Length: 202
Image (cartoon, rainbow, N blue to C red):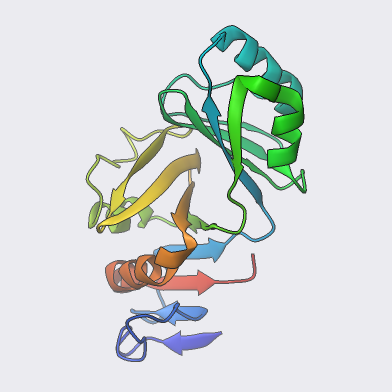
């Protein structure tokens, strides 16, 4: 991959998606971002009705408990995130059509919208992820506060995102595809002082 260590933003056009490579301080690696490709993604919005029936249907379809707060729950390659009251985000590396799976299982209990081509998902790892995100976040992302399994639909550097902490050292971030270039520019400029690696082999 390319080495962009001298001036990380000098060769990055404002509206271009950053290319894979190392940005910032050479010989250090504080943050790694990896694009996650091949995920099937859908939003789920509850209709007025029986929340218990919806939770049971989701459990049967995905093997996941429906989070009733801003939380992320996992079962293998599937993830379900509470994004707002009565709203969730479902991601799967297992189902080719998670929206279709949910529509078949939930019927009239919820409105399902496929988002697979509308968003970009990144895994962020490394000892400086929280420090990097804190430069643009409006919420407290201290690892002692934002624990694994916690999630937030929020703004990062004026960009709307959904963020969740998957494991102790892994954060995952979802953004509208049209804002991918802006988000990566923020990550490059904010993480360069720690050493930033962009890996697009997701």
